[in-house]
Image 1 (cartoon, rainbow, N blue to C red):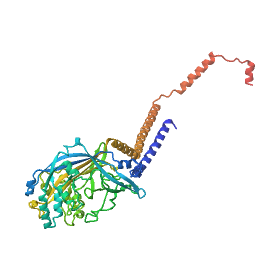
Image 2: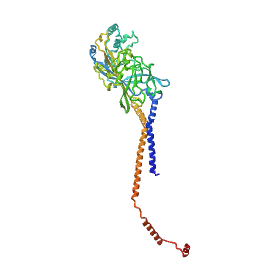
Image 3: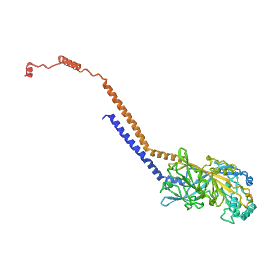
Image 4: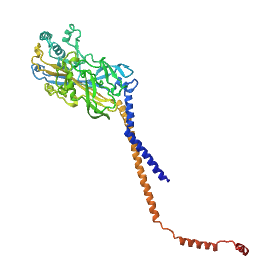
Length: 518
């Protein structure tokens, strides 16, 4: 066997083995299964892992922006006209979330933690000074007291006279800082001695700076990777008791900061938020890319806040049962100490058009007012998130309060928040390196098939060249002149005779000759 034949033979063997092994691995999905199983084991809330440390102390900066609606025509509204508001903001705060009292329970399958939040004002990202800028808005303590006594006409009348005597009005003008972090309200101060459970101070974020939303127990993902980061209990309860159906009272999903790896576009992601007093779900919207990292965008579909007519499952959020608002708004009085608080998306995004038309100054749009999550589908890590919610007050005519006699029922916007987070550069580099490793390992079978294909091309080239050389050799043999054998023999014979004549020879005597022929 020639050297060229050996090369062709060896190339063929290597090519066959690479193609067979590579195709078999592609069909069997061996390498993706190995790497995905590894991800399921590594992405868990286990002490000592990087994932767990990042969960306890998130490094990406979180920003909380507050926008307020300043009322420009309160007298006209109280006279029965259409209210007009102008948006003021943002007033931006850096939010810090370091989990505390972290304790593993139930053999490491669950972890207990508190989630306190702290806020630090950022003047460079704000439009003004919150301790100076004034906002005219609904007097929420006054409206709450009116709503609490509306069931009794006589009690309402007495409270109305008393409120007028101390100068309480339907609207108030306060600084941004007071509305957010609290002020001593004159009405609540007078009610406190009679009902000590009523706080003297009021603020939308009163006692929420440096405090926790409650005690949470999370699944670590050790038992089932799909449970990673999900809430098991909140304040010792596995379900709520505010709403009128078991489905509505369920605590589903995570707190929005963690999701299981290997996310599919076809699944719904659930988030429990204490601000809304309920769980909501998000569906896949589109593919996006953030800092070079691929992600799936999930956002709440319209049915999350749809009316019971469009989504019967939402009937459980009507309290008392049957008293429902329209699409895009949710009354949360049951978890706001009875205050007539209504939540929605900013500017009534995805809400009934009647709520938008009722307020002069509303201009909902998807870009500025949609809540969304951009998640890397391989790891489940949030790459970018925007949580947007609006706080409103339900205002209507209350018998016994003359100042409300001309009011039409209105869901009045007070302010909305825009809570945002984007992965930091250091975390983004780590994420891209991890995804590169996952991609390379997962595609090893394709690399093997590719090498097999290259070897196949080389094999074909070698075979073609071998055939070409063989053909050329045959052609050379066919056209070469063959020498004349007789002439060559004659010439050789003549040459021999000449050598015998001219060259030296041995002399033999007659006696010797005779011996030869004897």
